[in-house]
Length: 270
Length: 256
Ligand SMILES: Nc1ncnc2c1ncn2[C@@H]1O[C@H](COP(=O)(O)OP(=O)(O)O)[C@@H](O)[C@H]1O
Ligand SMILES: [Mg+2]
Image 1 (cartoon, rainbow over the protein chains, first blue to last red):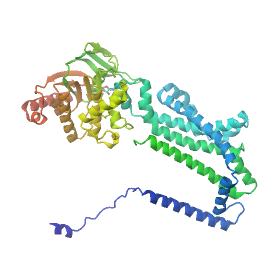
Image 2: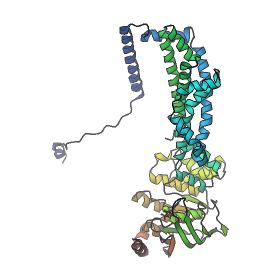
Image 3: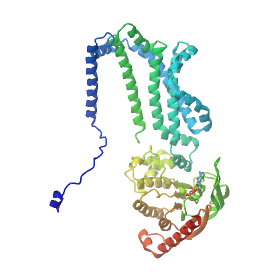
Image 4: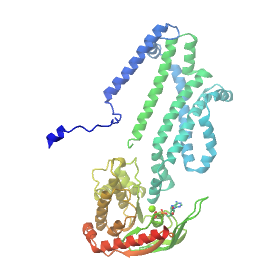
């Protein structure tokens, strides 16, 4: 029998679909390092070739980054000023938008009242509003906080609303069958059930708030990191300009990673 | 004792026609009796069960439990849902303890009690798992343990095995018989499976969709404790099943 099996011809196989296989961690990091190295090499070569005062090489940018952070420490002051408005604006957006999203999901009246504003805010680019806000609010920290708020709130509110509405109705019925009050349904069913969407909203909102922070300083209200970048541009300090940009990108990535970590922790059950 | 007197229920949704889900339903269920309800889909089985649980308030008539009127969700009944209705973010232990938590039982006590019922449904060792890590049959055991754990005198089960494959369902039926015979409660069990109705029930309530009426209450005089295999081979079983099938077929011919 076995020989017969061995001798038999193979059935022509159709192509097999290969699912994406997970890579081991060390390989992931190796691949990432490789991508960064490749990017650095192209940059270095390109900058040398262009030989322009306005395009620094990768290596000079890295040196400038080192200097501005650890030698002169020039970046920290402006970075702190920028982040202060971010650290106020983003939490305010969260504090306002999360309850608003929850209320819109549960009570028709809220939904009807706010849905036009939400729809407009979703469609509207915020940047053109910056001059209006500045005229109305002056040049202090308040307009910057407000603009960061404007950048972030609608994405948080819509995600929270969608998340609560997507919670399985039978779970609510189950909880009521065990005698749950409205309050218990909120804390035990709706909020945990909406947590994935709430986290998506918070993450998207965080990115938007950060973008808002930089944009307002760059285009209308030169303070903080934006002002620093504009100065470097004015004095043709391209290496420092690039280094500052990279520092901002690094901060954004770190924030996103912290958020992701929080999300993983909250959503272990997924 | 549960007594359902002249109960009618109409669903009214804005902009839509009324649906009569129950009309003049009368039924008495003794303590510790296992009643199965069968009937074509849409005949009001779920509505009747929800009314007993206080999850809907019938538009007419009244339901009393030991003489007290049902006016809302109450502590006399616990529900097992067709789609399990487990909290995906909570461990099996927390899911089973959910009803106890809502009753305000302290943490240590409710964990002890939940563990006891997890053991009873044969899920020891799975306490720390999440629902998605369990098969359908195991998930419904969690649902069953959660309902048993609050130790209400009444269990309401709405097609609890309807979402399971045939073998799993069969196995769960045997387990339910065993659990129930060791820990009797009043059970109202909705099903669309004739064999299940006869195998489990002391009484089978046959409902029809014209609309939401009880057609007949059939006594299943098979002794307890029941040995499922012996029951299935018995003549009474075959006879009752035949009879149910005939009645249900008549109903389809009326409506079709
Ligand atoms: N929430 C509801 N709103 C309106 N109609 C409903 C609702 N729930 C059930 N119905 C209608 O009531 C009738 C009985 O439903 P149900 O009790 O779920 O029947 P069964 O469980 O026997 O299939 C059906 O016609 C159904 O469409
Ligand atoms: Mg039903």
